[in-house]
Image 1 (cartoon, rainbow, N blue to C red):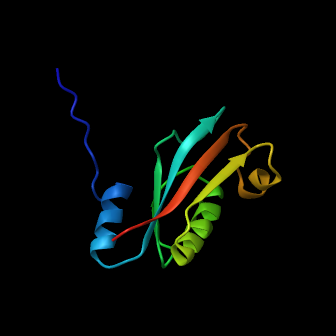
Image 2 (cartoon, rainbow, N blue to C red):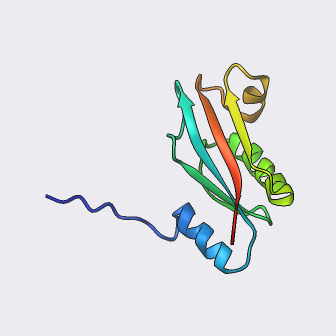
Length: 113
């Protein structure tokens, strides 16, 4: 028996990024590249951000997303990719809401249109 996973194209961050680029928008993508312990999203999860601060997808939930969006906007301006880490041991993690006991590493880069 085949398992055909249904993809909701209206909510898929990669499809949305492709659409935004085709509309001439500057777009960054944040990707969870590593997780340790209790992390809200698994490696490979995406968040796409346009230059107006619109975003779709998720890399963690909660306030971490706000920090990632902010970093992504800077990446859109500078063109320089970033590796971000959030974890319970970091003071930053408590400030942005990752107090679940896990850690995540998120790579942020600008997408070429």
